[in-house]
Image 1 (cartoon, rainbow, N blue to C red):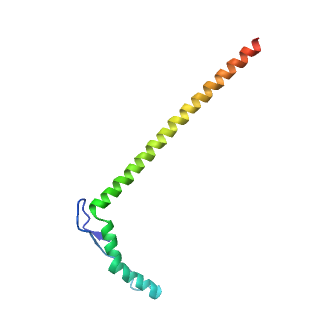
Image 2 (cartoon, one colour):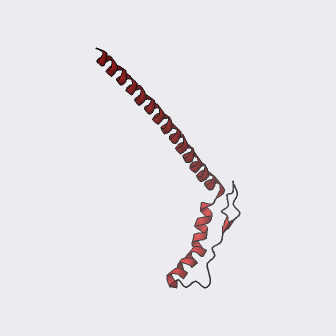
Image 3 (tube, rainbow, N blue to C red):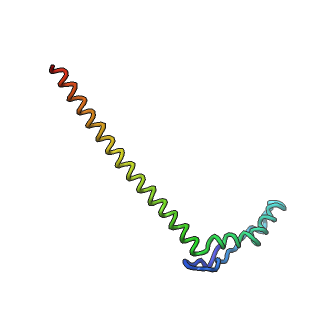
Length: 102
C-alpha cells in the first residue's frame, strides 16, 4: 500500500508491506518479508516519486501513441499495395487482350 503520491513530490511516498501472520513459508520467506519491510519499502517508495512516475507514464503513453501511428501507417501501406496489385493486374489483363487481338 502506498500513500502520499503527488505529481511533483520530492519526498518518496510512504509504502507499507503487509504479510499474513499465519504464513508458513519457512525461514527464507520470513527473511524476505522482513527485508521487504525494511528495505523494499524504500525502493518501492523511490520508484513512486511523482516526477519519476509522471515521466514513466508519459513515456509509456508516447510509446503507445507511436504504436498506434505505426499501425495506421501499416494499414495505409497495405491499402496502397493492394491498389498497386490491382492496377498491375488490370494492366496485365489489358496487355493479354491486346496480344489475343493481334
